[in-house]
Image (cartoon, rainbow, N blue to C red; front, side, top):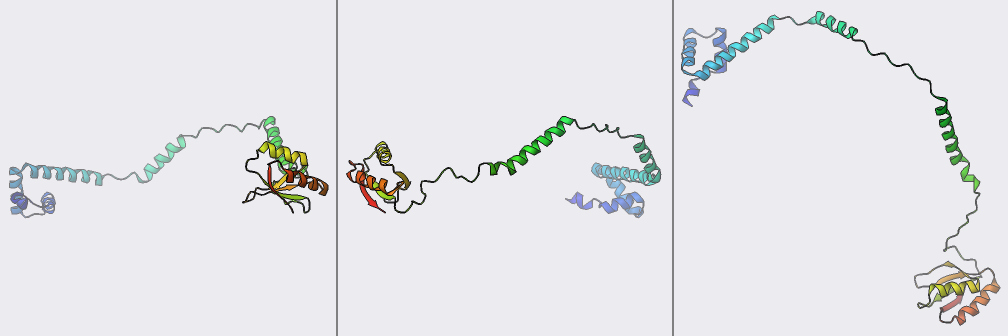
Length: 197
């Protein structure tokens, strides 16, 4: 630590190198540099940097001449010629036209070809009034037994099962419903409950 306190600051070293220090202080720094190799190396480094900076200050920047040289180099380096545009093959034009025609046909014409016939109805369609029965099938009845019973009577399921297990069965006319009511009442263990709507 004592050595560092006696060591000259960077400002003093710069003043020493530029000759602005008093002769006594300059002699003191020279004497310390003889005893301290680190200080001697630092002084040598500062002298080298100072000399390099002096040389670079004396050089003139390229300025206008450098720019002219760069322009000449850029002009000498020509861009490669662009290839001539090739005509588009006729088959490619025809393919694009065909695709456009098909897309237009799909968007415009196809939706109107089928008409407005629904074709399918959901099982939950609202039953027609007067030709329906509300039925509760037995839990032990199989699907095959229920289908057979419905096909014998001409009934079709239009709603159900409800939360309490009731099904809505529709018929084409009143006579079919009346005949089915008798068959369902006799049920044979397939129907637990039948009720007219």
